[in-house]
Image (tube, rainbow, N blue to C red; front, side, top):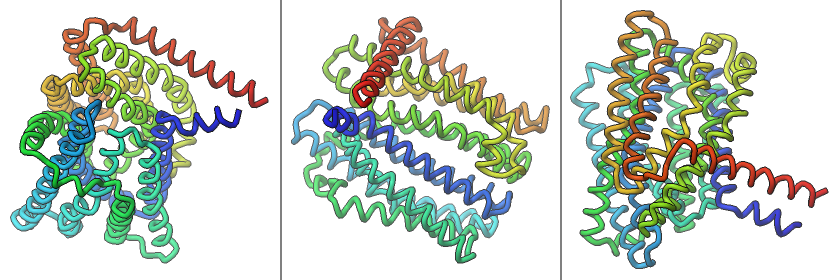
Length: 446
C-alpha cells in the first residue's frame, strides 16, 4: 500500500497539480496582504504594472516554451541539447530587447507618465532579466516531464515573495517601491537557486545550431502573436477600466481573476502535462492519438471544474470578504459572470494548445487576435453605454464564446475524430477511472 501511495506522489500529473496549487496558494495570500496594505488606487496601479510585466514575460515564454517542448519531445539527446542551446540564444536576445525598449520608452515618453510609472518603467527590463534563468529552467523541466523540480521553483519564487511582504508589513515599510523591490528579489533568489542546481542548461548554448535557431524563431513568432493576443485580453480590460472609469475599478476587477485561480490550478496542471503528450503524438503522425488526447484532457477538466464553479457561486460574498474586504463586495456580480463562463475555459485552452502542437499556430493566432479585437470593441462600447464594471465582464464572456466556436471549427478540419460527444465520453471515462482509483486507494488504506 505504501508503494502505491508513493507512486501517486511521484506521478507527473500530481506534481504538475501540486506546483500550480502552491503557486495559486501563495499568490492568493500575497494578494490578500497587498489588498489590505495598499490603498484601493495604489493596488490598482500595482495590478496594472504586474500585468504589464507579465505580458513581456509571456512574450518570451510564447517564443520559446512551446518550441522547446515541440522540438525536444521524442528526439535523441543530441538534438534536444541543440534545441535548448538555440532557445537560450533567442531568450537572451529577447530579454536584451526588453531592456532596451523599456529604457527608450522611459526616455521618450517620460512626460506622459506619473512619478509612479517612471519608477515602474525603470524596472520592467531588469525584472525580465532577473526572471530569465528560472523561467527557462521550468521550460526545460516541463519538456523532460520533471514537474517535481518545477514544484520547488514555484514554492521558492512565490513563497519568498510572501515572506518579504510579511517582513515589510511588520516593519511598516509597505509602499509600491518596496513591494516591487520584494518581488524583484524573489525573482533573483529563484534564478540563483535554479542555476546552482544546473536546471537552466545554460551550458547547452555552445551546442546551438543556426537551423534550430531559425526553426524556433519561425515557430515561436506565431505562438507569440497568439499568446500575446490572449494575454492582452485582461490587460485591455484593465486599461479600459483605468482610462474610462478609475484605478479603483481595476482593483475591483482583479477580484474575480483571483477567484478564477481555483479553475486555473486544474487547467494549468493538465495543460502542462498535455503539451508533451500531444506534441509527441503529432511528431509520430499519430493523429488519432492527438484527437484522443485532446478529447480526454478537455472532457476531464471540464467535468472536474463543475463542482468548483458551483461551490464558488454559492459562497461568492463570504469568499470576497475573506480574500479582500467588504470594500470589494461590488465585485460580486463580476465574479459570478466569470464563474458561469468558466465552463468554456477548458475547451478554449486545449483547442489553442492542440493547434500549436499540430503545427497550426497561425490559426490559433487568428483566433486569439479576433478575440482581442472583439473584446476591445465590446469593452469600449458597453462601458460607454452603461459606465459599469460589469459591462467589461460581459464583454469577456461573449468573446470567449466566439473563440470556442471559431477554434472548434478549424480544429475539426484538421482532426476529424474530434467531436463534442467524444469530448464528453472520453472525459467521463477518465473521471470515472480517477474516482475508481481513489475509491480503491481508500479501501486499501482502511
